[in-house]
Length: 528
Image (tube, rainbow, N blue to C red; front, side, top):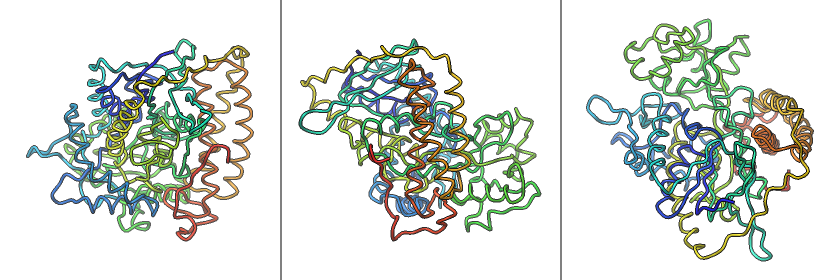
């Protein structure tokens, strides 16, 4: 058993920011599935939305966020995050993050879909990678932070007292050598990122299997709004280009969406045209390529100066060149792909979940900021603002427990399990889930498709649970089990919302229904 003051599961911007704050008051363990730099943060291209210009205002950022969120944003949370943005940016800069500047040494602010002003702070087109670099350097230099790379959170440790509420006090963690060991902590943070791998096509890395949401739900924490999965409109369409995102910022800098016949179409769908919110653009592309029988749409920025394109988007330019696409001379073939989970583990204004001792920050959390559709580049902002608030609350909790002994966890019991000789079960179920989620619970849904998906996931979960309890736990089995549960949560949330709003579009209920559905979808353990 390993004992710490704080346990952080996940090593993206949320987990590392929290760890750096918490390390000032105690010992921190950071558990991460792959190498510590492999996170959704590392793949974020666009930037961080924040009011930094005299031409912008908190009120306008607030209004843009609410407009994108389609009536489900929590106004007080939007206000909190927007107004704490400058302080969050200041903390990142103090920790060594270098954002791009213009010729006059002011920060170069970009614009993305849904934003009325230029307010996107960026590091060219690799903002997430720059943030991850700086935070990792700080964390590696901190003696109070211990990293556990290639370790998997399996399940949370929960104490059920005779009196009082259940409380989380750590997690069972799978080591790369196959041993499962309890990690105990006075406060536990889930910062595990999203669940894009539940879909066949996604911009997310392979690690995005919804682990935090699944672990929290099994432990008894409330989850919500899982029907709102954001599909990024523009992922590179090429048979060998796995998961490569074409940033929203390309359209922010004048990129135009066209069909293969050269025709533009976004003006028919939204008054902001190519700068419409992501849900509108993704549905428009999906509809147009299906209607025309095309493989993809085209994103054309060739009318901008070639030197500007290379300077502003060096990563995208280089990656496209690998596939013989020169974006200064020819348009980029793009398709929508699963990108960001707007729902997740329900939290309060300091990142505390409904389970005592458990915090959640970042994409795995549902704070009320994003509502039914996340405004571009609000995610990294939310992660920094909330990690600071959560660390302050977690430190206070840990100090209050300073002299108290944590419960003693039971050792992991693997006595009745054997090594599997049927790994094909895992790959088959993984592929089946991702395919029917894409076809039945994707950009456009229907009551019949959702019911088909529910029947299939129920059958698969029975098979997966039986496999889980009979065979030795492996990383791929942990991910499959979590992926299946997250798929079920998405389906059940989608079935309960008999309307279309934001990222949830159901052809059987095509209109928004504020009278009955202007509220979060909440699922508690035992009601599925």
